[in-house]
Amino acid sequence: MKKIVLLLALILSIQLLAQQQVYEIRTYELFQYSNFKNFNTYFKDYFIPIMNQHGIKDIGVFEEVSEDLPRKIYVFIPFANMETYQKARAHMASNSKLQKASSVLSPQNQPIFNRYETSLYMAFDGMPKMVKPDDKNRFFELRTYESHSEDAYRRKVNMFNEGELELFDQLDFGSVFFGDKIAGDRMPCLTYMLAFESLEERNENWGQFSDHPTWTKLKSDPAYKDSCCSTITRTFLIPMSYSQL
Image 1 (cartoon, rainbow, N blue to C red):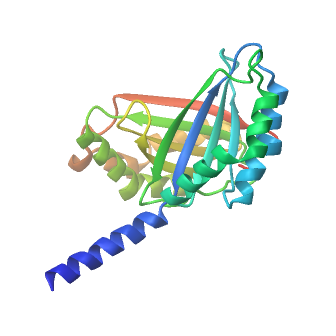
Image 2 (cartoon, rainbow, N blue to C red):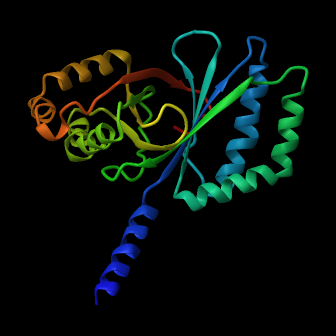
Image 3 (cartoon, helix red, strand yellow):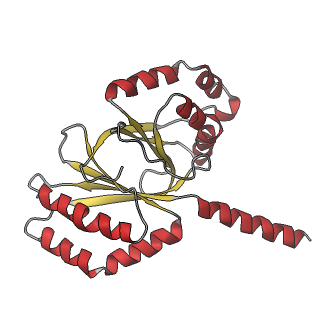
């Protein structure tokens, strides 16, 4: 009987895991002389359409609001689950149309980017699927929280799942996704994205958050003591014209 119960629990766990999306975030670093037109052509006319043909939609392509150098482009790709990610990766590597476009648009003597970093995330239990923002929310904030220990990290994730996510919704933060990083640099860490109408709205909402009684209660809860954070990184982004987010 115990074996049957354990087996059912395992099956349920696998099913729940399958319901959580997997996210890939790529950060492309461009050369100062990179051909930006070719970069956009690659993603607009090849990469995104081919991914869409395989059921992978709502791909976001963003540039930083700042004009810092080197210029960086962020690509967000949501997958239904890890199996979908693996299949897509294999297909993209073998797709002759995409590989030819890459060769033509990014020649050795003038590549369209230097390198890209990539990270994988598992969606939070409290928000297992991303939410596409409406057309008026076109100012994005990408935030990453690094933790000093695995214990602190897990308690911070719990803090989101058990209260912060709901508060974000109450304050109209425009939550797009929340991801538990499972592969990449600077772990353990989590990353999430918010969408606002403007920087002014963003600042106003965060101001309300800081003084909200729910937040005061959460941060004083002993269960979350010293759970955040060794480093917080934020980046303000705006979507490219062909971005699906």
